Image 1: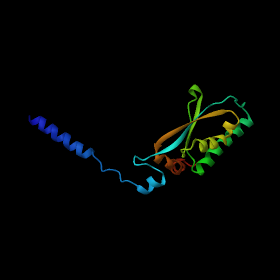
Image 2: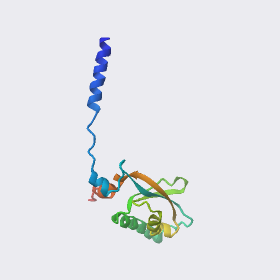
Image 3: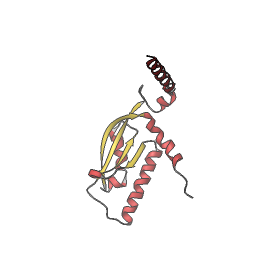
Image 4: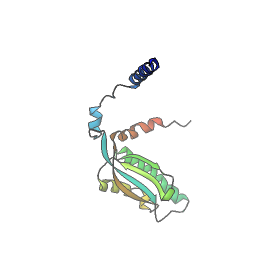
Amino acid sequence: MKHLVCTLALLASLGAQAQQPPTPYDAAKAQAWGANDNGLRPYVFVLLKTGPRRMPDGPARDEMFKGHFANMQRLAQQGLLVYAGPLDGVDGLRGLFIFATADLDVARQAVDTDPVVSNGEMVAELHKHFGSAALLAVNEWHPRLIKPKP
C-alpha cells in the first residue's frame, strides 16, 4: 500500500509539472489574420500537376522556371500566396500553392499568371481549404531563416 501511495503522489507531482500555463490569446493577430474562434481561416489550396506540354530542356525552359519563381515571389509579396513548395512528382503531383483567399476565382487568376501553367508544363487543381490563420506568418518568417551566401 505504501508503494501505491508513493507512486500516486509521484504521478500527481509529474502531472502538475507537465501542465503549462495556457498560451495567451492575441486578439490583434487573430483579427488581422482573419481567424475564427479556433484560430482558423479559409484558404485556397492548389495542387500543381504535370501538364500536357512539357517544355524541352534548354534556355526557354530555364526562363519559364525563372518566371515561375519570380511569380511566386511577387504573389507572396502581395500577401496572396502564403505557402508554396515542390512535391515528389509521384502520380504527376509537382507542387502546391496555398492562397490567402476563400475565393476560387481570385486564386485561379493568380495561378493563371504563372508561366508553368500558362505554358502547359503544369495544370492546377484548386480546392477550398480551412487551416490555421498562423500560416500567414510564413512569409514574414521564412526570409529570416535563409542563411546568407558567403
